[in-house]
Structures are given as structure tokens and as C-alpha cells.
Amino acid sequence: MPEHFLGTPATAPGPLGPDMLKDFALIRRNPLEFLFKTWRSYGDVVQFPIPKPPTYLVNSPTGVRQVLVNNAKNYDKSTIQYGALSLVTGSGLLTANTDLWRERRPIIQPAFHQKVLDNLIPVTNRAAQRMLHDIEREVSGSVTDIDQFMLNASLEVVGEFLFGSDLSDDANAITAATLEALEIVIKRARVPLSPPQAIPTPGNRVLKRSLRTLDAAVSSIVRSRKGMDSTVDPNEVSHLVDLLLAARSGGQIDRDGIRDEIVTFIIAGHETVASALSWSIALLAAHPDKQAQVAQEARTASALELHVKMAQMPYTQAVFNETLRLYPPAWLITRRARGADRIDEHDIPAGALVIMSPALLHRHPDIWGNPDTFAPERFLDPYPRESFIPFGAGLRQCIGKDFAYVEGVMMLASLCERLEFSYPDGQGLPASDPLVTIRPVGGVKVRTTRRA
Ligand code: HEM
Image 1 (spheres, rainbow, N blue to C red):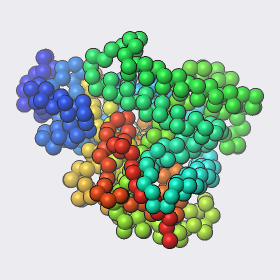
Image 2: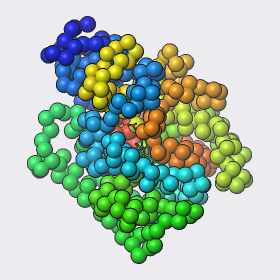
Image 3: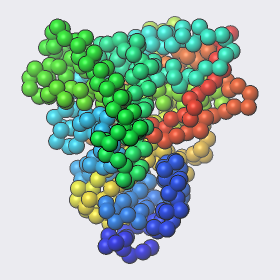
Image 4: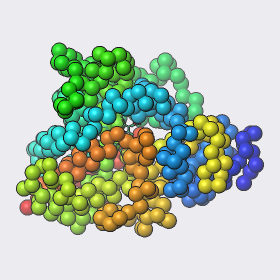
């Protein structure tokens, strides 16, 4: 272990400068694969040869827990990852640092209360039925990119549930704008010297166009609520947008804040769930026996009232969990250490960047048996909850976690009850591309056949 990187003490093993240079192409092409390689070579706490900020990869269950839960007060979100994301979302709940986050979370939380989420079940059910109708308009047995359907359906659910708006007419434009904008800012974050936004490079032009599309969607959402009474009755079920507008009347949030929160929720609530659902179908298409179990469970539960259905589909929920274990959409979580800390016997200096990845922790062989195998059954028994962090952990855990389970499980059940998914000859699981979420390269192209 070297002693210093240009004056920054080395406190954990890790690659040297020349090793990093050799991996430069891999870092740009597939940063997640690079993190896997680094972890396998150097262990659970790794220091990169970067003097400013001192940069660590942490992949032990105790280390991740310390940063996100036990000593969470010592860490904030002033990192390159969240800085890049905020070029699109502004200062919304996801990227907000501690003080702003403390103001916003209580305004927004009521939109995710359990009794409000009951309303999500029929909303998801309608979106699933519409998706089935659209898929079935194509010839039975034809090959379909299920990922595109998932993106549009999950946008429809977010639009109706959080904003009381029908975004379906603009779904293609909004999903394309979201994907494009995120791809550009995330790729920029991988290159230290990107041209500033004001310079009209092709990337910056696309980013500007995508932001215009997202801003137009925000204006249309807010316009559609205008004229409605934006006072909020605490006993009534409220859309997120109404809570935001009421907070504006009370002076707790301004116009830019409302824009930033709406874009944040379009992005955080849309592509993540769509990714998880697309990978679930991709994995089920590769495992017909497990797909048949989901179909059977959905058929048995189909006569039940929508509200009791969720509890009767443990296998479908296990499939969704196992997908989140193998392909956690939010694969990267970063924090900046405000003060010095000690993680697993390694000194972490103030100002350090700490990189964690649910994708790595979820494949840790000390915790998960056969970590690379798709085995939903592992979630039917007690499992290591503290090392399962697809939604993060601690105070900054995902506000949409229960929302994602309702939508994910209901959607999977509806699809598998009616359709059978298989790969065309010679094709299988798509490769993965870690952008903001882990995207399936080229979508998920599967043959859809009506179930007998
Ligand atoms: C499978 C789907 C989802 C996954 C895997 C996911 C993952 C995550 C993760 C890992 C975090 C924590 C990030 C960190 O600690 O740095 C997070 C935060 C967040 N997520 Fe999700 N999410 C999902 C769905 C949703 C949905 C459906 C919504 C909204 C409708 C949402 C909104 C948010 C917001 C606003 C935050 C920031 C919360 C805060 O800091 O208070 N997410 N999500």
C-alpha cells in the first residue's frame, strides 16, 4: 500500500495511478464492471489513487450501514453524481442536501402514506390493462420490446397518481427526453473536463432540448391543476402536485422548487420502476419454470379484491426482489464525508468521497449464496435485510419504496397472468448498461404469446 497520493494519506488498499490509467476505457464504457473488478482485486474498502477528494469504495455490510444509517449525519450528497443529476432535476428531494431536504420531505411525505397508496392499486391496474391491450394488438407470437411499454406504463402511473395528469399523449417524448438528458449528464460526470453547458456541443444541444420537453410537461401538469382548489384537507387523499401547490400558497416552496420536485419525481419514479420491471420480464423469459409459477399465483389471486391481492402473491414479490438484487436500478450511491470517520478499521478523512453500490453488495459471496444465480426462492425465507439495499437505507431511503412494490408486483402479475414471454431463437438476457439506472442494452426484446 503506498503511503500518500500527492499528499493525501493512503488508508486502504487500492489500485495505483498506472492501474487506473490502464482501466480508463473500462471506466468510461462500464463503470459498474470497473467497480466489480476493483472490489474483487482489493477487498471491501478500497482507496483510489485520487488526491482530491480522497475517494473510497465501500462494500462491506458494516461499512455501508455506517455511512447510510449509523453515522449518516456525517455524510451529505455534495458529490459529482448528485451534482450531475441536479443539472436535470435542480434541487429536488433526491439531490437536496440536508437543510433543504429537511424542509421538503414533510411537505411531500403525505403523498406516500399507506392509505394514499391504496389508490395506486387501481391506477396501476388500469395502466397494466392498457399495456396488455396495446401488446395484444400486435400479432400473438411476435417479438416486442417490453422495455418501451414499461417506460410508458410507469410514466402513466406516475402522471396519474402523483400529478392527477394524463401524460400518455406525451409519453414517448417525455420518456425519450428523460433517457437522453440522464445519459448526457451521467456520461459527462465520467469525464472530468466536460465542456460547460453554455457551449453548444451536440450533447449540450440535446440536453437543452430534453430539458425543454421536461419543463413543458411540468407547465402542463401545473396548468391542469390551476383553478382547482389547492388547499389540502388532511383527511383527503392528495396528489403530490396539490401538496406542492398548497405549500407554495403557504410560502414554503417557490416556483422553481415546484418545477424541481415535479421533474425529480418524473425521473425518480418512472425509469427506476420501468427498469426493474423490464429486467424482471427479461429474467422470467430466461426461466420459464419460474415464470409459470408467477402466472399460476396471479391466476389464483385474480378473483380477489384488488386490495387484498398483494398479500396473496409472495412468489411474485420474491421475483421482484430477486430482480432488484441482481439488477438494482439505482446501482450507485455516493456520499461526501463532512468530518473524519473510521470504516472497518480504515481512516476516512473529512471531505472524502464514498462510493457504494447495491449491485456489488447484492453479489457479495459472504452474504448471498450463489450470488449470480436468479433464485427468487431466497426471498421466501428470512434473508439478510441489512445487505439488501435497492432503495438505499437510513433517513435518505427511497420515499417511493412502497409505491415501487405495489406497481412492480401488480404489473408483473397482470402481465404474466395473460402472456407468456420467451426469447426468439438464439437470443437471451440483454447486456446491461449502467447509466443512472442499469438499462438493458437494446431494450428487452421478447416473444409474447397469449397464455392458454
Ligand atoms: C424500483 C424502483 C426504485 C428504486 C430501485 C429506487 C431507488 C432509490 C434509492 C437507492 C434511493 C436513495 C439514494 C441515496 O441514498 O443516495 C432513492 C431515493 C429516492 N427515490 Fe427512489 N427508487 C425507486 C422508485 C421510486 C419511486 C417510485 C419514486 C417516486 C414515486 C422514487 C422517488 C425517490 C426520491 C424522491 C428519493 C429521495 C428521497 C429522499 O432523499 O428523501 N423512487 N430511490
